Every structure is written in C-alpha cells, then in structure tokens.
Image 1 (cartoon, rainbow, N blue to C red):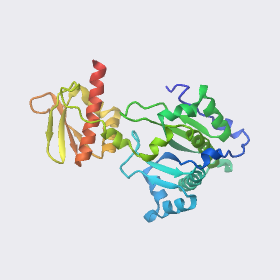
Image 2 (image 1 turned 90 degrees about the vertical axis):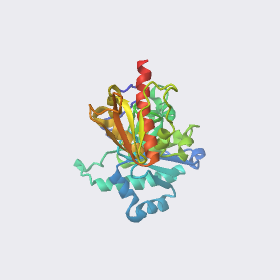
Image 3 (image 1 turned 45 degrees about the vertical axis):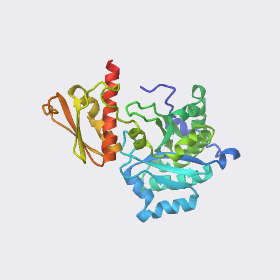
Image 4 (image 1 turned 90 degrees about the horizontal axis):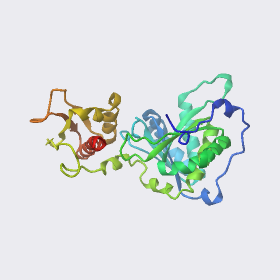
Amino acid sequence: MESTESSYMSSPEAVRNRSPPPPKSPTSENAEKPAYIRFLVSNAAAGSVIGKGGSTITEFQSKSGARIQLSRSHEFYPGTSDRIIMVSGAIDDILKAMELILAKLLNELNIKDSDDDEPRTKVRLIVSNSSCGSLIGKGGATIKSFIDGSQAGIKISPQDNNFYGLNDRLVTVTGTLDEQLRAIDLILSKLCEDPHYSQAMHTPFSYAVTYNSMGYVPNGAGVKFPNHKEDHGNSVTIGVSDEHIGLVLGRGGRNIMNISQVSGARIKISDRDDFMSGTTDRKVTIMGSQRAIRQAESMIMQKVENATERVD
C-alpha cells in the first residue's frame, strides 16, 4: 500500500466540477533555463512519434524548437516494456513539443468519449527520487496546489526497490490534453528550482549504464555464494544455488525478463535436476554480446548477493 506522502491523486469528478484557471507561465528566471522532461511510451507509440524515416520527430523539433530523443528499441524503463522519450530545451519549447507529441498519441488512440467530453488519458513522467520531495511539498501542499492549478490527476509512485540502482519514480498525470500540459508546466517550473534536476539531462537513458556499473565481485570478496562459471565466448554459464533461483526468476518471471530487457542478453535456466558439474547449483546460461553478458551477470549476482546479506 502506498503511503499518503508518496501518492496523491485527484478524482475526475472533482476535477470536472472546477472552473479552469488561467494558464500559469513559468517565472522569467526559469523560462529560458535549459530544462528537460522524460516520459514513457509504448514501442508502437514511439514509432508514431518518430514517423517514417524520422519525418514526424523532425517536424516536431522544427515546430517547437525543443530537442526530442528516444531510447533505443530494446532500451526500456525497468519493470516495463516502455521506451523513454526525453524532450529538452527552454520550458516554452518543451511544452510546445509535448503538446505536439501528446496530441499525436491521442489521435492515434482514436478515443470516442461519451457526451462529447474531451478524452482523459495518462502520461507517465520520470522524475528522480531526490526531486520528488520538492514536488510533494510539506504535507503534500505543493502537489495539491498543482492538482488544483491544473485540474489534472497527479500521482507519484513509491520508490521501487526491486531494481538495483533505480533512483527514479513515475509521476502519472491524468487529464485532458490541456490539463496535462498545465500540470507539466507546473512540474517543470518546480523541478527547475531543484539543484539536482539538471544531472540526468546528460544521461537520459542511463539504466543500462547504472546496472553495468555494479561490477562483479569475485568469490571471497564479501560475496557469500560459490563462484562457479563457464565461459564459452558468446555465452557464459554461471551457477546459482537452487534456493536463490526464485529470486533470479522473480514473480511471474518479472526479474529475469527485466534483466534480459535491460542488458539485451538472452538467459536460460536449467531444469531442477541439471546442476553445474560437482555442485548443487543450477545452471544459468547468458547469451549475447560480451557487454550484454557482463551486464546480465552482474545483475543476477547482485540479486543473489542482496539475498545472502539479508540472511546474514
């Protein structure tokens, strides 16, 4: 259950009963500051934003003056199968680009709402954990003012500790296009006041880098599991004790799917009675490029290491 401090959501009924406030412009001090926003889109939606031969994204950049970047087709936000879009530039330019992108995605959905109401959709923004406190404010005052000022529903997810090195949270903005844009304007203006905010601008799709930087700790250097490993060039087989295989797999295969998506490696786990030679460790075979293998191996080892530290 999410704590009241980490999750705030306005109800659509309450939103629709409020009269629209005038659009809020960012302060002149922040208006020209380099800013950015990151959000999630499905692979199919990413394709419509790019357009044939990059025509749509080029047009949107030209019309808005903002820079639009997408993560590669195999680079997903941890725990999802969604790609990341980063829009950067001055706040006004970002808002123009966001309007173009969200309107395009809305048109692709072809939503038919009843009573001729404007459709209410969701956009999931990525915000660093260190910046979420300033968005929430004391006793939730800031985020409540954003909900009132934009008429959008705004929900900040709790931090997900299932993914090592993930320091971001999702901020879900629900509303009509205009309501979403007003909320994004308010959120961006607040983020620009945060000294830590600019750091992620230079590493917008850094999840693979984060995982790869964990490093593999050899046996005997604080890691409390056997170091059994067979290297076959484009594949590596490592041993993981039967009791820890469930942690590698995760509920419904969630962990292993995430490791595969983030690293780009293919991972195969042996049957229950198929052990590494001379051990009772199950075989975990990792296939792919050397970089993908190293990354997947370190992520798997980290899962096991975390488990053994909790036991101790």
